[in-house]
Image 1: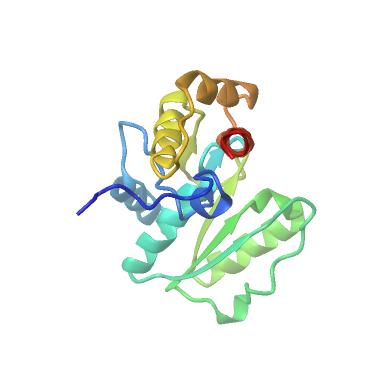
Image 2 (image 1 turned 60 degrees about the vertical axis):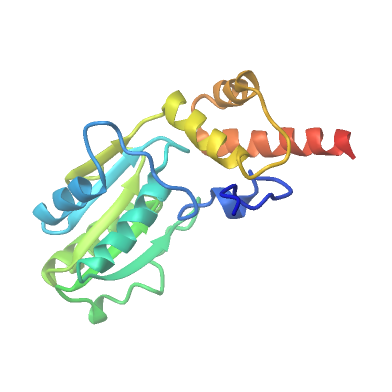
Length: 201
């Protein structure tokens, strides 16, 4: 029986690259369990800091599942640019010490709303895990940084599903043009793959 993955039209399509579809590649000095232990040791309160496209959301997707395995009731929400209201999914009256609030893009909230929500969560002994681009006053659980080696590994894995090759130079060029933003670089590779596929048809 073949062990090759099922071939797809474009291995860089969003369904293959979205958070949760890709595995977060941890730096050499830590892993998922150690990161989870660090969060638990800080009473389930912490922040993941990093620039755009460095894997914060992918890491959060892995942590959410692992936290649930440790008995946490996770309420996970993502805030996008301009979304400065506390999401309706977060009802502070319903949270307790078993709850972990996970907010991807916490900095979108105003300072006053961030402060209020932190106070409400602390008063109920609940947990709070956030992602941000800078320090927002919680213990730092992990800082994500751009890595060419990690991006090359991801791109190569994705290409295993495709029918057309891309050279390492093409992959590196996309990565460098996007200044280490892996998300944007994967979008560029999607477009490049589409051009190659069109030429073959």
